[in-house]
View: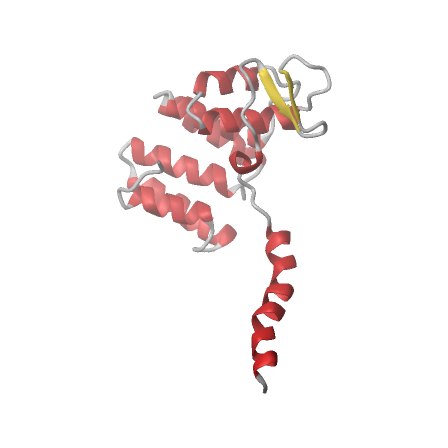
Length: 175
């Protein structure tokens, strides 16, 4: 092989793997959701911040933005937004309600919300991760490890949910 051919190998690899990486995506709402002024929510259809009372806002956009708020530490604002959903009986809405509630120090209430999320979607790894983290707060590493085993069966040991719960069990809770 000549030097030109050797230099093309990385380009070829990148070209072949790029579509795969893009298809895998990033399910992290905080990475693509911009901050909106108070009382506004990011509308994915218009890609703008709109008043949270806007009739054009979907429950999915409100749910995603509630999680964005919770991840920023605005737990009560997240709960208030989740209270405005037309249909709050979704696995994501219950999970994010559990997350915000747990972060407000109401761990038992949060556990109940995670359990409601899992009743709807038993293979929801993120809800299992958060439930496991709640069990760690409650001093129940045995129950957290049960969730870790279930997550391993859902998405393996290399998925983010497994790694994050394993870190919490090892005494390195999420930041």
